[in-house]
Image 1 (spheres, rainbow, N blue to C red):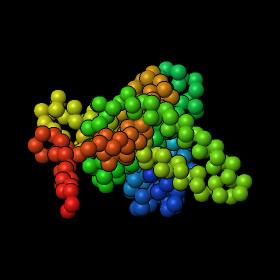
Image 2: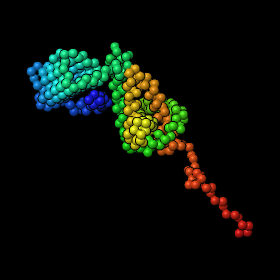
Image 3: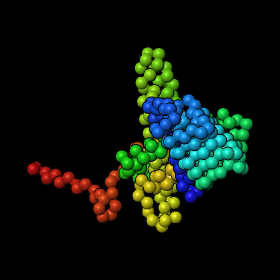
Image 4: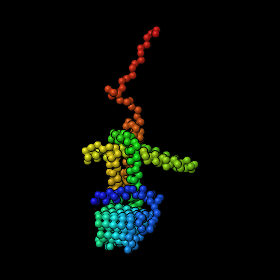
Length: 337
């Protein structure tokens, strides 16, 4: 089914940074045989007449298949030349491929972010899912494939880190996310001002920390400050995305979503907007910073989601008339007592 193939491709692309780290730490190049062949910055060649009995996964490498592969073939940030047979699926992520006249693919052919030159004589048993880089990052990417791929990888890494942070924040501090979401519709104007002021202050603090590198104090403080700022921004963003997901749940499913699915629904909208053809550059460089300013501002004025009224001191609401009763008067002073 086409939706399943798109989901597979999107999942692989979104998890690309984790795949790269895992492969770089533990992958070893294996000979053609029964074990899966995983190669990093290396080439894999299956000559004509030879059968590879398992999967082939390469990262930043080249794959040439003239024989037969009984499993799947996954190429990330590399190239593929297929003249033989692949019984399983062929998945290309940020990779270019050439599918020759004699090529035969038993499963789906999925391409995300690269270009595939496919012969009309090639046989594909499953479905073709082709998400070209120019479709994702706009027409300007044509002729600037290296720059466009770098931008695409940057967007994927940003979405991957944001996804992990939102999952952790929603799981650990769901009440604070709800408080921020409740306060945002009433205080978004103040959030804009607070966010701009906070960004200016953060820039000044960053400059001070850079100066402190001279005495080595700023070296550990700069990454610590960056992590804290990133978490605070995403705490505010989690509340904003909750509003988006909650509204979508009401309109589409006629029900109130719990915090976790509501935040993930808002994140899905955010991710789609960041990958719209021709709109991705504008979203990344203009809209996303504005949204981050709003998120930082609403997180600060709600004291990081601890109170809707933020830093203002207000009298707590009373049980009956909305205010606590006034304190009792002191006893009268009796003369001569």
